[in-house]
Image (cartoon, rainbow, N blue to C red; front, side):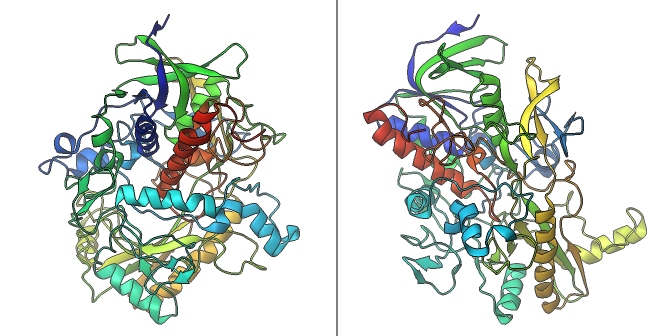
Length: 588
């Protein structure tokens, strides 16, 4: 039997970006909030000290900041006819662990989604007609729109101090910014970062070809900044140890550098770390959440009663908790019915690598979100008529830092060991660069999340089963976008280029992206969505589930900015209409 704790007003599950933001906003409203975090408390000065933060073996190879698969893994397969097998080591994606979550080791790229992304199905049908829609796609609108989302994007950017250059201020296109972005209410809080050689060379070539390059919106700050909560961050030093690392310089925006230092000092907030939530508890009718049950490191179970439950974990755990708690109808790919597990999507990673004879890029200089990009090949920024696919990708050069263990770039045909491998490594290390194209992932009926019938975790609970493969739509898009990027690469004058569009089946072994989305999606129809536009459960009105799990599909952008905006959107709905009249905010 679980030991029952005193009741709280709110219990928040997970203290990454979304959980920390919502917990802070609700404590500001005077509510008594407890945040339950599966991993340890992270602190910059202790955990990412300047003397130890740049440790490639510890953080990049051994993945110290990631959730350990012995603690909680998933099973994977490509289609429903296969038997899923467990991932014994993280490859394709890197779930985070501890306060700050995956925001501690993220790259820092912080795009807003575009206006048409929030009504994607309607937009494409209106523009191209039903006959043009690939039959395999199960696209959905989000149930919200740009006008509702924009203020929350702006609030998140101010919290994080995002660096960049506006491309559209109130409908007026701005020189030097992204002309394809939706109209913004304000400029970025900090100016764009300085650019290393490789992004500068890319931007020059793209500009000469008629494209509109812009600085990649960055959570790696370009200058010292104090956010609205009074937390001060420093400018990025281009150390090159960024993606998969914590930041020793307080330069990479994350929950631990922007909001948790304020939140933890509040008398009406409690953090319970190294505590894993097992399930959300419900009343006998299954219509009201009564709290959560969690287990500590000793194996002891605790029940935390609460009037309001907010689930803000990583996508996989959000969906798994809902399935194990019996919330929502599990999705059935055979019938297309059910909402819990529906519309799981990913990101389609493509690139073009270039080898030069006359360039030195100093690739050890960089950061996860230091770079230049173009958006001409993204989403519906180009005419898709007759192409046989929808979607696209963000094309950019962002040198993250070529660390000594993992960075051994050699041209195709080079032996994997021996004297020639060494010679090519020395020749190519400083004289190669890549253009990435991080592209959309669109939903199909057979990509979904469910509980595995065979494999269990250390606590005897079923693992989450991921069923995913790249739709033919996305593979066609990958080939087209990569070919377009290759045209820019050739204009840059390399000795050799290597095109790498995504091909074949999804492979869970090599890293591709941690941008896993969907499974508990938002929308306007309870038959095809699990939460409404305020991230409130259709079935359990005092339950809010916030995160990338709410995305009905994934456009060609990184998800973090939208996760942050959704967190502020949900918090505003709770602080406003929900607390005034607790219950469903949107009629089912």
